[in-house]
Length: 487
Length: 95
Image (cartoon, rainbow over all chains, first blue to last red):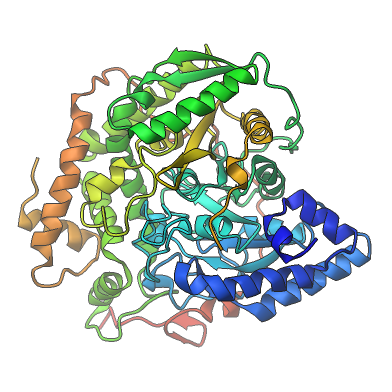
């Protein structure tokens, strides 16, 4: 294979090329690092690059391959969202608060990817502390969408999405608290999966809203996502919410035919607020699914409209608690000048956090404060139960739920930056999935005005294999996932 | 519901975030916009609904009461703003 075909190759093809000595891991890493050097200045998809470290990992992978000890991902380059602590790497979470934090340890996700023999190309840009839907809240500046540099890539995993879309990396890791893998995957034209809550360890992944945060793969295809998830997933005693279940091969059912698959279409997903061109692409994907042997049935998620308000109580409440650890004492930014201890906290946090993070900490502080807890936090948790119950009822009549990932294609940089509420509403189709703890994914299903459209697939708990099967069969029949932006 | 400036200052104080002069006004307006969205929750009938704190109904695991971590004191303090003889330094709190 040559350079141009390498950048479009699947993980399986790259593994075959490495095993067949058509290319070495060092050559492969160099090819992507050179491409990053050339294209990243315009996209701003990476916060940290370290060629020496990357090449050292690639050399180790080559040695492992030469010994015949390689696995399916050994020698394959990956980019990691800067939310994952990686030993010896600057780990900023997109914040000034951690702009000086070189992690002394690896997150479990990083540790597992390293054990599989992957090569870290760099740490990707993201909304500060994963709070955002456009990658505009990053201390390191906005990421640009490779399909149109005047548009946002989505967020919060916007750097990972732009990097895969521009073919700066074969695949990347992301995290999803309210849509942060699926929405940027949709807006950048890639495939991304948020697993069932508890499938991937959160240890070493900087916490935003602990009961909602979940890491997952972002790649060019469902097959690649399955292979990467195989490396990322698994029980971890260090994460108290990690689920102790037998290991799964997420690629095992990719080849199954779809005949008999029942797809539920929530009427609330196809109602007011969905832009006509996105609706059209999603409808066309459903036609393709019927052609592949699936049937569709209307279902209802009557409490879906309450998911955004409930999320903006629960997520900030958990965030205000999680982010209290940033106090300028043990790590992170400390104000250069201060009076007493309290003043040091207040100034360090005022300087270290950006506007959106501060807003969410303040909301969280308020809804948890004396006298407001029942009206806000408990009410939001009751709504969370109603939403989870809606999904259980829907899954009685279908195997998977499908709909749009995002109500629109990528919006303009700056378009929603001044209006937090408008920004929040762009996650209307993804948030309910996190509240219920279900797995969700997005895959490309067409274009509108030259920008990619994402189809969302929602599975029942632990339905990843079935979702990946449905996505893979669609990708065998269509070529949306193969299209890529120039150059 | 609408927050007053005093309430915004009180929340910021609880959250240990200093507000710059004039910042409270802007913050109040933005927070009130967000609370207008959150207020939609109040119309939902949730009588008798059990609050859901977590996606999975799992109990906390127990483990053997033994040392599992190596001592990496020095590594972890390397990233601290100010350390002396293995201790984190902060402004004096006790006279």
